[in-house]
Length: 85
Picture 1 (tube, helix red, strand yellow):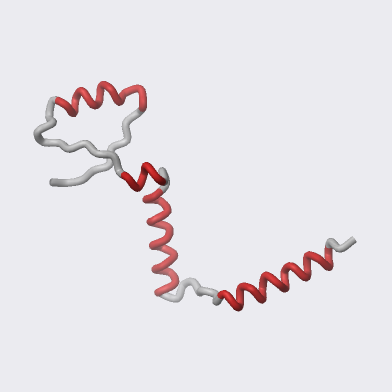
Picture 2 (cartoon, rainbow, N blue to C red; picture 1 turned 90 degrees about the vertical axis):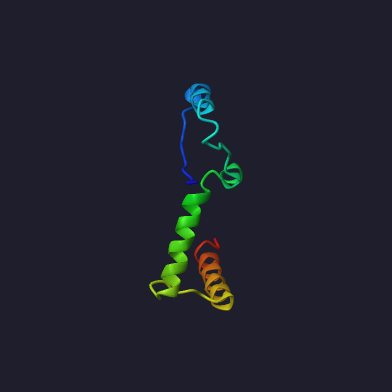
């Protein structure tokens, strides 16, 4: 069996399901639980995989929490100095 994703317009869903019903012995219709919880699940998954691959291939670098905290503390100090009035 193969899996496909099919997007059906809301106003066509009833008619679409009637069509599927005529081939119900050959087709299984089920909703994707990932998309129920997050409609952008697969786009996010793809983006995260790209980020992960970029980090592995050294196209991108990661920052330790300690480095991040130092940078954020410095930024906070600069902003406080700038907008202290």
